Length: 111
Image (cartoon, rainbow, N blue to C red):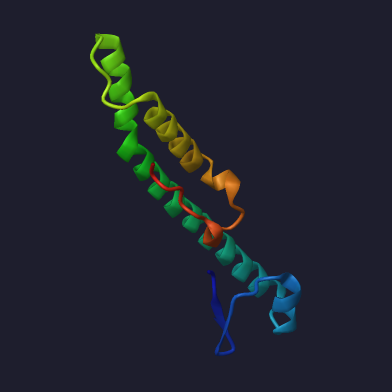
């Protein structure tokens, strides 16, 4: 959660009306709001980076399945498992669209 110190007090509210009520001028309000937006962008980037690592960590199983099918080899994972992996990967891919705030993100469970 983004927080800032103004007049020796910690605050998390970045609404313009609140900031003005603290006595901030337009430049200070803009600066705090820009910092809050930048913080949120950084938080989303960290979540996307973690998401990409989680996808990468299981994608190899799907690639293996395609390779096994192409070579006529017995499959290591059954259809149900592969379907669950596809659903898991899609849930990870959809995280930024599923949650409005980074603090609300709930990571899907690996089947």
